[in-house]
Length: 317
Image (cartoon, rainbow, N blue to C red; front, side, top):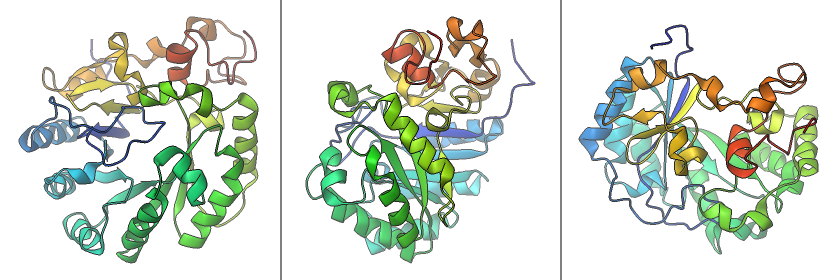
């Protein structure tokens, strides 16, 4: 059954590759090698057509590292021509001045998210590996020099949560926005769950500082930090490297949460026939706090980590 009253897809991630030049400890998709199921350029264009047909608002190109694909410029240009607001998440290490110029020429209004896991080399490189901080900062500056709208993507973990003030200062000094998310231990991240999983106190301390912040940096705070309603399957979905659609990328290893596959069914049909309420834990739906003082937290944590409610926010069970 098609739920026509359902909100349009607001932010759709599209994982065009799992190939990556980094091997970050927290990587949710275990990026590194190229998937044998990776879609070809024409298939990717077909998916973009499907997103336009479904009235999607923003298409976020992710990986892996999108810039390892030689057709990245063609992909971005195509989405831009079709009228989608295009975004790309990158570690920026491959962004030379020439790459930044070329990106600007093919997709002038491209929004760019650059993954930065700490304000200094030692904090950032604890997760991303030696020598990665300088490469990322050089690439980020090249993007800013071309006039791109850049947001630093900061994933809060047990090692870096205490540096949130420094990240705000770094963003202010560079002239970027700051996006703040919570580490979810899936993929390669599951191997480092003990090292990286933040406590509820650590998440709360970050949330308090962000709430009190009154500086010049524009903040984009994920619901799993702010306490808002999880957007997974509601206004957001992720298209995985093989065309599988999931409510959010963290559900990639659990077929019971798959929404469909764009190679088998149009995205519009997948999106408008999906009921996101199936993701809310049953315990939450009968809890008196639900939708009053609690929005059930991170649904990926609920199902994948705790097999129950999101223990980092739950005040009842």
